[in-house]
Length: 452
Image (tube, rainbow, N blue to C red):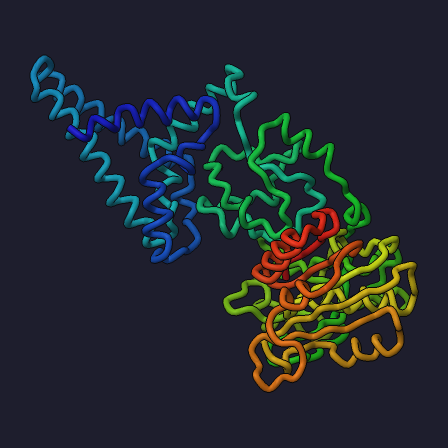
């Protein structure tokens, strides 16, 4: 009898899809929840074969499923008027539900957790219903889609594609309205939560237009693609390399604190964003520091494949979060790990080119003393400028004689009134520091950060 509960489920998903597409699949479907929560951790997580994503399989399986389903309904109808009818009817749905669990579970384990969802009959029903809803105008004011605030701010990193359970590619398929129009999108918001640029939302069309209108392109308006050659690869430590790219383009506009996109593969075209540690317009070079991350897709390609003399396509410079407000009274830079790289160029600019800033401080945190990068440079800058203070803090090194703990332990003892604060480092560091600063009543407009 529990199988009869599938009837309102079918009615529910059909009704919801009239207004919101496959929202049910990504937010309500019990099978989808099972695939995401129970099977995802143990799935092979391979690329879903094109066969399972084809319209032919989707429509064919839909016809086969409902041919069998209707045939069983006809057989059961002979029991109409008896209690046995409801039991037999419920069993039809139980059998169908178990079939989905078994087949969906097997293909999830063999390939990826949401493989089944690409040819699920209920998903096909939702797509048909969604088309009807759009035709009748029912979805016009209710359909929320993955939306980019401005596509010019996209890092083209493909992260949205790599985390998408349906293995779709939002980053290269946005419409003129900056929306992802794929009917296969299940609106699960996984890409929204994982977007490194933080530009994705689940929004309706009128909201998307408002977001686009109100989003400034400052720091992104001079972005452009250009070719470069790897001039040098210098080893900084066991896990970090410095890459110097040389280019010929005369139209590259850069401000200290910006980042660059480095192309890592052709098909699909994919980039990774790295803070600019040094920029020389005369010799036309741009320098970045890259830390090899455990299981890092992009850093693995760069460390294993990039060689001096290779041609590499870059995009940028771009970004405004770490561009220093030189009208500020005092400035504090907060860095952790590889997040030190943008401050190398920012401190150099303030020391060598001057500004009206009365004092600027760099608080640099590391796990151990031997992990500090560009230490000699920052010490030299501190000697050259009376305005610059360089503060180091070590978390896990008993022999270190300086500040011990985390960057938050230093910040909480500082007078940060009238300060602009710029942070770059691992997300746990930036989040902890942001919380501390908010608790210290530092206005949010005075806090800017990027995660490294």
